[in-house]
Image 1 (cartoon, one colour):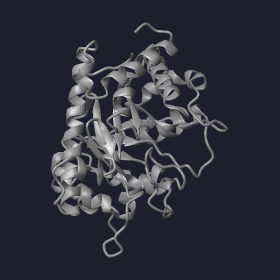
Image 2 (cartoon, helix red, strand yellow):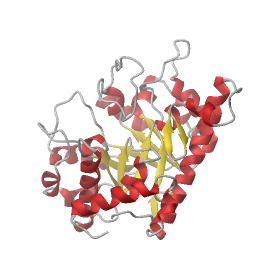
Image 3 (cartoon, helix red, strand yellow):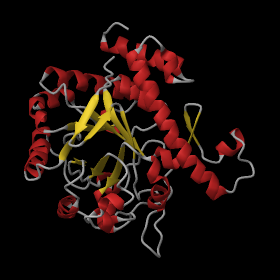
Length: 347
């Protein structure tokens, strides 16, 4: 379809795409009342040495101190922090954490979510404290509490923000316009050449449409539009799409960067994301204590992401060999052909 595997350059960091990015967020994870740290931060502290390429964290969590080593990240010793290992640090603006209703696909809503005070000025403050001597990809500001803006307005706001911070690599997050529930490609087209101002073009998987087929079709069409209007070298970042089944499909449709929290929430096994406790039944961990099982699961999930990425690269080189995509390759092949037919292309 529109898959591509290529070298992506972010300053001193060069990554071989596709890039699968483990995310960390306080949303949906308990906050320790004693140290104000999210459970997800403690997971990261354990797993950080195994995250080599890229990591996504939120400016919202940095602002509220929900992540370990925040002060060190802002200091000259940032390479000694838990964020020092990945080649690329992706900093989201905090829109996900600010949204009371919207959750990443598959999230079981572990409790009511009440965001703490946070706004554009806080985002600016956090971004301006980030170290300048490392590769950073910063996501444009998104606040679900604000009225929606047209695409030119979204682009102009983000452009003004990054124009004053030329040391940053920019990830422009496209959001639906007023009175629209998903990305309107016809409206995007009128302003699309101006997207050359950004290094990466981002979309959340939910904003692509209300069902998987529509999302894949919209993503593929966005990739074509970018290619045809001088943005062929701008990769697409699909937010919330890190999953053994979804990532390959979004990759086929033209996505190149994928992030998500599923590596902390679920157990990757045989090409699926399962309830963590099911893993003990399917493996030899029947007598392993829960805390240790969780630790093993986090590391196993990161290793699984590495294998998934390798499989995607091999499939891109040999698209006729679907076995590279693992145990559910036949179903992925069927979906691929379906999307091709919808797009009016030959398989």
